[in-house]
Length: 325
Image 1: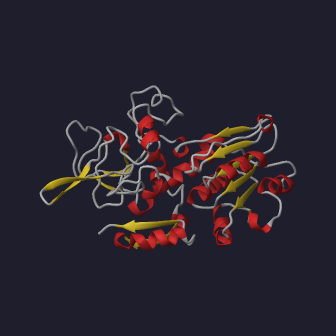
Image 2: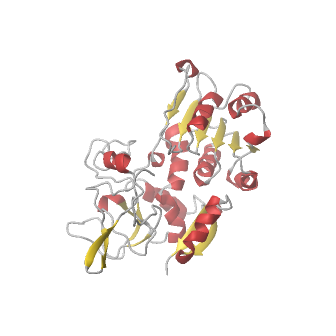
Image 3: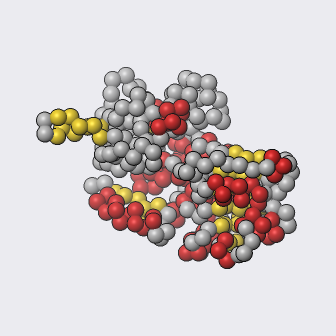
């Protein structure tokens, strides 16, 4: 990434217990079970006061512009004393790859005491992003045809949400066929490997659905696939939901005539507000209205984080939960 400065504490999905609170913090007390959320919520700006806008005017501009630095002040909250001098350690969103982290109260959500941390941590980003893309942004309708490009955690969460919403077909697309059997557990009804076809994936989907899918979720983060997603939807009504983030910075370019009633949307964290909405999702987990067990394919001690990264790179896992202590 553009600001790859180090040393830095990475990680933005985690769950834990409040160890201490700073002056003026009223929402939390020592011992509270909490979920750090990277999309802050001040609760006072016009966006926070809107039901369906989670891009807080206080936090989002800096978060969008710096990505790797804390959204307020762009100053790190971590440091070490080295050779008699204070050395700053940079942050990354909520910096959860650590036994202790320091975050703004606006970037923290109180969660149900009965929510197991090893499951609740998945709601820091990946699961709300996929669920919300289907439920909040696309508003998938019963009987519809859905395509999901990219069968990682976010893509499978979108597929799972489409299944729960009543989609008649959920078509999964990925170049790693090892993911296909697992995808069926999340409601994917049929899988396609683009490498098995000579035609572009949008043509394959158009032919397979007699004119295009109703909703297509791009969950990889590739401009070329975003365009393919748009062209795979049905003219007149098709919705393209861009969930992936392309790190190249390339613009998305297409002929306006490709729209003709189609629409393109791109939510952040599934349009869920961190403090107001995500605790409700975790309540569903506690009530067993949502199951996340299948997303956790591996659990390792924090000391083996490099092994976890290797599992992700090899495409052999969805979420590897790291346990502290």
